[in-house]
Image (tube, rainbow, N blue to C red; front, side, top):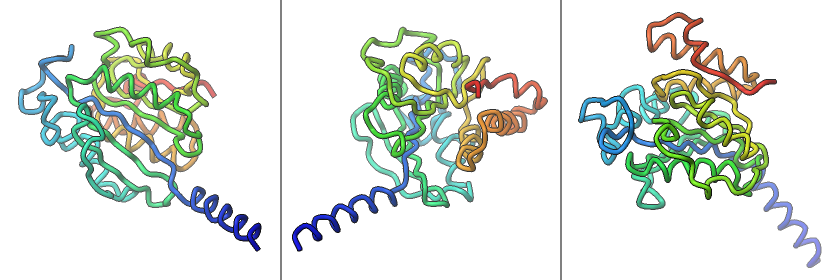
Length: 242
């Protein structure tokens, strides 16, 4: 009887683990005129300590409002950041119940810490099934500083990565390779990393589309937002070779 009880409990634990949604962790470095090497934006949206009005968090095209407006994602709630560098954390559940987006808003002055945390998530010991995709959105801090050595100390299990910042293929690419990450979507040019790009990329990823199809989705969203041709928008993005 004791053995049967233990087997039943083990089955319950395994069933619960299978039912829990996998996490897509998104690291957002808030725009900050004072501490980042960005082209200055209006002061109201360029304060890296004000998430509610920040270009990459509070504006209409930023991640929170874009995902709140999406029919595919349900807003679950807001939490206090787990450490001082993170102003707040938001959670969104996919309509399928299979995935949950966890988005962290980092102070603009903590962009280095945000970047390190992004890479450490890619190389963490968390099973790929539980954390299949990690994304970064914001200014490309690696244009301003070298990636600290502690960011990549081991090869990860091969998670996919989305990096939405200027010329991320060049600046993040070698470090993604060192981390054993698979770049689902990176960029080749200066660009605007609006949350709508991530929403469209995930719309394809959650449907099991190829990296090339995800790139097409991202480019379509970017073309509509920027008022440019689809061909020009497609040139902004690169993907892992399939």
